Every structure is written in C-alpha cells, then in structure tokens.
Length: 290
DNA sequence: ATGAATGTTAGCTA
DNA sequence: ATAGCTAACATTCA
Image (cartoon, rainbow, N blue to C red; front, side):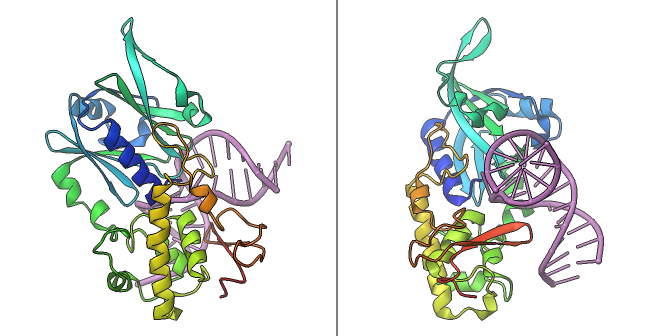
C-alpha cells in the first residue's frame, strides 16, 4: 500500500506530532511482526525510556532514530498503517481519550502499540501481517545491506536526469525497473503505472528500447507525480490513512491505476490491465503503445 | 460461494 | 544471471 508519497506523508506527520517523545511501553499481540530482535521482551526493554530524536524515510522504510544510538525501522509492506492516538491512565490501564480513527475498519488490525509520554500512543495496524519492524544499532543499520542496497531517492536534488540514466539497468521492462528498489527507492505498483501513463510509455517496454526523449519524459513524470502525490497526502484508493486517520487526496489525480475498463482521460480509449509476474499493470493502449 | 486479486519483498527454483 | 513463482496472511471482489 504505502509507496514513497504515503510513507513521506506519514514521516512528516510523525515529525510534527511525536518528535522528542519518549517510549514508555510496548504491546503486541502478534510478535512475528518484530523481526529484530526476535525476543519481544528484549525489544521492549531496549526501547524503554528512549527518546525519539529524528524520524526519517529511506525508500519505503520509516526510521525512528532513538536516543542512545538505536534506530527503529518500520516497513509497512502492503497493509501496514501507523496511527496516532491520545490516551490517559485510568485504574492503571490505558484508555483512548477519543476513539476517532480507532473506530475505522483499518484499526481492527492493530498488532503493535507504542505508549509514549504526553499521553500519546502510536499503533501499527496491519491486516495481512506482512509489516516488518526491526530495532538496530544506528551505526550498524547505516552500514547494513538492507539500506545500502536501496537505490537513490527520486526526489532528491542530486538525482538529476543524468543520474537517472546512470542507475538504469541495461535491460528489463520499464515498469519492473521503476519498481526495483535497488534501482530507485520508493516506487511501487500504483505510481509506476501513473508515471508511465503520464510519460506515454508502455509498461512492458524494455529499457534498452527507450530513446533519450522517452527517458526524459519518464524522469520528469516521476518527479512531478511523486511531488504532487506528497502535496496531496498520498492516495487512499484502498485503505491508506495518515497517522491522524485522515485520507490522502491523490485519488483525483489517479489516471490509470485500478481504472481498468474506464476511459483514458486523455484520449477516451478504454484502460487495460495486464498481468506480469503476479502484478498487474494498468495503461492506456492508445497513449502507451508497445 | 468459490476462486482470484490485493499495495511488498525475500528467497527459492528452473 | 535472471525471470518467475511462492510464501508471509486476511480480506474483499467478481
């Protein structure tokens, strides 16, 4: 679900609301989500009393830098959501101050909660339980294969058109290449479809067949769409929510993803969907010729 | 009501 | 080397 714009939206919200807060307790009813350390009690103990000093995004990963040289990494995969709530102590138990977003369906699947000072709680809901949570030594994480294997951030200033061409592999289908996290970090199924529609490039075209002009269009579409999506707070076609429970508004900009059978907004041709390797690509067969 | 599809990605096989 | 499947899991859509 969350791709770069959604994760960026979450990270910005987190920075606004929980920077400087301390972790006071951790709860989970599905400890498999925590991959490192395996022992939940140790996980809990190491986190105890640590202050959240910085929150960053790397690709689709959320990194919480904690006091004392530790970093908590959360990858939401398909259906993970981070949600923020306010809580109070009553008879020794925590209770919600206001139910708010907690009544939404996405919140039936909360499997991990962080109790913070200032009566805040940060919850991870995850319907399909694919999300990944890891606690690292910050230094160790910085040097880890996990982060080092990530490609450049597509929105960074230093990611010029020249750089884009340099990181592209010699062959491969363009859609797959765009979604390859080791090539460029943060793009998934939704935004790759949207980028290629905007650039008028067929998703299964081989990168070796693309002209310099084609690549330029893809590069520009990528920068433009990702920035617009961040401005709109991400998409919410299925279930993405901001930590406040609010939706994102990229949907009105969504041209092809999950629009099979609808008319292309540019030329009126019916949008097609094709499956490749278990993933579907949506595109306009007229605007995006093979 | 059964089967297929669903944003991700690591890891395996051919 | 690499493309393509499977698994991790639960729900919704056709």
